[in-house]
Image (tube, rainbow, N blue to C red; front, top):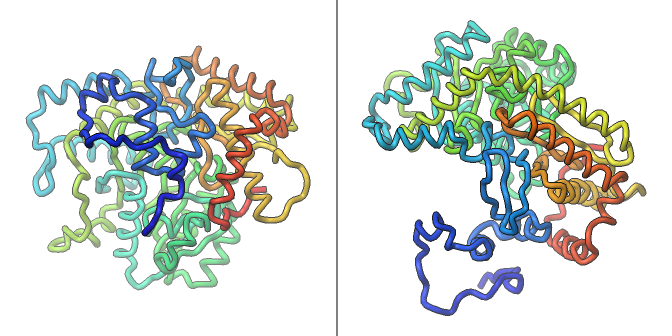
Length: 498
């Protein structure tokens, strides 16, 4: 019998008869934070939540304003987390009020799978029109909707393979991240996520990010006719906000076009304004064949993914009697499409890319000033628009062997995340980069709150002027618990980033 390895950590289960929790219990907050944590630990991703709970990061959190959350003790924090999927803050009025109106007035079919849908048609048209405004060659593109970014990538892979059925290789880039379902995971070169699931989808190759000569050499080695597609993030989000050198994406596009190789631009984090442009690939001179979107399209409220495909490629996979060769049960649902339509409208009406570019310059300047003042804490800082990264010096400076070094690097970012949380800012780790904590604030965060966020980051730096303070400022009991927790983790770690 498989036993729960952390039974002793959990509060005892109720011995009384099981009672179903009613929706009104949660809505009225009679369902307490402590009970929510207990049941989340018992029935959900226990290991993740246990680690967050050790760090006092587990919540649950409650909305005060769209840009500020508070915990059960009433401590209010500025929310710069959400992995770029919360473009307007938590439950933004512009979306919630529209959803209420939708619920009252909508008569269109809620889940149209084999019929036309006004909501889906409108969002498809607007996305293609927006992309064609930036890249005119996409005026006759077609859109396939799904429910997440990883599904959008899976769809993109299938469209590309149908277009080049005799080719067998997909090329992605080191430190890249495209999702964790089988196809997208195969393009995410991270042994920590991949190894236990091997063999993955065959034919996935990796090239160094930003190195056009290396990509050219790899394509020449395997043969251009054998490459299905090159899949690229215009800026690597989970890789730690890695910005490629000027000309890389433009050169990548020209190289692939010369050989007929499909280019897939993963704009799931960068698309729709966060980096200061509608589409970061277009801003860097790349005209991809397929473009994927997700996170901000759902307005932080619903799950929406989109794969935008050149017309001939779309028809090759879904033409004629093959039109059901790829499908998604909930993709194109009326509520998701309506929220996507409203989110896109709000982005366009307020020109949020321009605002992101302006605020991004302010934020990056603040971080660069902090890096100069506290070089023993910050190794480097990066940013583009409202996507920021802080890479920290290792909190242990001595040379360490491989596995121990990786654990120290990972602990550096985790303890930095906790200290930033203590400074009342909620941030993100980077899933494909050690020692990096990211800030991805809402695109409509008020100016005064945006400035206050960096004031709090400055206070965090003052309290941790050297990265070793990340360790010494952590209570000894918490350090011991974290060490014991880390000892249970898989021994294969992601290669370090420095």
